[in-house]
Length: 320
Image (cartoon, rainbow, N blue to C red; front, side):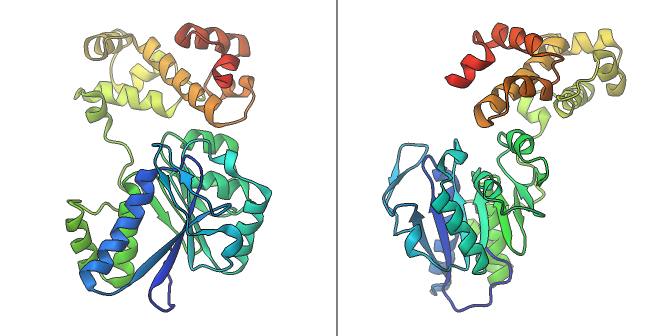
C-alpha cells in the first residue's frame, strides 16, 4: 500500500495469496478498503487476488479462496501485498521470485502481511528496508536475515515497501493508508463501522503488556521476566537478574514461586527452549546454531534440556 499514490481512482491493491496464508490478516487488510468505498459512495480502492498458477488457495484455517489471476497475467500494479502464514519460504519458486523482481522494476510497491516479509527477503527485495512481522516469527527472521533491520511495531509504511505484523495489525495499517489518502475523518468512520474502538498507531505494541499477559502486578517480578525475555541469546545470571530488578536472589525466588508457580531458573530455561522450538520449526539453521543462539553452551547441553522439556530431541522435533 503505497504512501505516495497519485494515480487514477480506484487505486488497485494486489494480494498474492500463498498456501496456508493468514485469512485474518488478509480480511483485516481488505475490509477497511471495502467499507471506505461504501461510506463515500465512490470506488476509492479495488483489489485483485493473485496466486502463482491462478488456481484457488487454501488458507491456514482450511478455507479456500478463488484467485482472480495468475502471476503470469499481472505485469504492473501500484502495490502488492504478499499474504503468507506458516512456512512462507516453502512457496518461493524461481518464477515467483522473477515475477516479484519484475513488479519491483515496474515501480510496484511491495509489502508483506504476517510472514510475507520472509519471501521478500529471500527474493533479495528488502535490502536497506525496515520490516516488521508477527512477534512469534521475528526471532526466526532475525536469525535468517541478520542484515535486514527489523522492528516489533504493528506496521511499517515506507516509500517502496510496507509490512505488518498480521492479524488485526493489517486493519490498523489499512486505516492509516485511508487516513493519509482520504482524510482522518473517513478513517475514523471506517474504524467505527468495524467496531474497532481505537485506531492504533504503528508504534503500538504487538503484544499485551507483561503484567496483563502473565496476570501479575508486582513491578519487580515484571522487570525480572522482561530482563529474561530480552536476554535469551546471552542469558544473564540469576544474581544479575535479581540485582537489576532491585531484589535479592532469595526474594526473586519467592516472587517466582508465589506468582508464577515455578523457580526463576526453570522459567528462564523454558523461555529459551520455547525460542529454540520456534527456530527449529521456522529456520533451516543447524541444531547447534539454534542452541547457541538460545544461550546453550554446547549442542549436547541443548539436546538434553530440549528432550527433557519436550520428550523429543531437537532433530526429532524438526522432522515432526
